Length: 433
Image 1 (cartoon, rainbow, N blue to C red):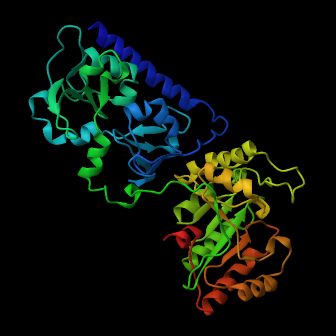
Image 2 (image 1 turned 90 degrees about the horizontal axis):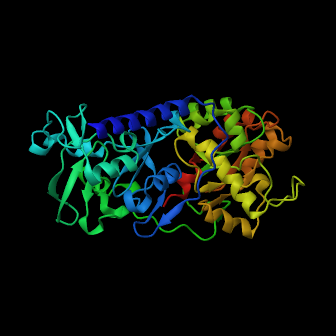
């Protein structure tokens, strides 16, 4: 029983560490990782899960991504071959921010009466006994469980060790089920990291739930080498995109959201990381009400330096601007801002398009009509300018700031465009095939 005591103490220590970390004051924003695309499965490692995926064994233990990030049961979720990970923003900056679904428990709920799953009274020999489930742990599986994170990562054992055919290859292996995983012993790899592998429970869950043909699991083409600049969409449909930039003050953002809600319109918002940090309630509301959020950098620095006179940004600084912004915005939305970017002041160069694409931003969102509300245009001038320039697929640039008259012009603008037969969609919706 000494091993059981040691395992219990180690698991308790991990849990105490998690609690202690959760009580620490929030640290600086964590820079989001640049997306990694896997041509083997046609999916990108989600920004929410990159760090956890690497720390928990990467390809060897979790496998390739089988889906993009998507919402499942109200959580940002991504399927992998051997796991399903979910993001918990309420536990940000603790070991609990990314958690694996209890796949072992889900896939064995109907097998509780089978002999390997029946609880036993006590452990024999040097095996650890877990009273919570009535099962034991030891040998190679015990070492893998303890070395890989123990209770926090794998959960309690749900069965004893037994031989079972692997659904993927039909071959029999010595296996053991845990709450979040199935361990498989590979004797040909004894003494190496591959001695114990995880079963393909992520793949199994996707098949059992009929998800393989769902949109998040569809093959995604490799990201472009150069971001695509969009100033207007080619469409015959009478649709326009209203886009609102937010980077200075809170301004009229709340009122703008009220007007959009009253009219049943979804819009796109280009927001900076610092604005999101100062106005988290508004960003959360944007996501909750179905608006589309575009990355507008962390602090609105010009990439080229033409408008702000600060000398521009080098390649590393440009990438840091978008990644730091996403690290602030994504937890509030529940998903990344990728692949959508709007350049501050509308300034970019050819190198920026390559740099953005490498960071996962495939769309550089410009505009067809600038209302010039930010530059002192009156409500009447905003209406005249926008109505005169309206064409199918147009992108209209407005601002939420207190210095702009765009909010005051918004309702008559909506009425005027609808009177001319136009309706509205987000930039993301217009870009969809």
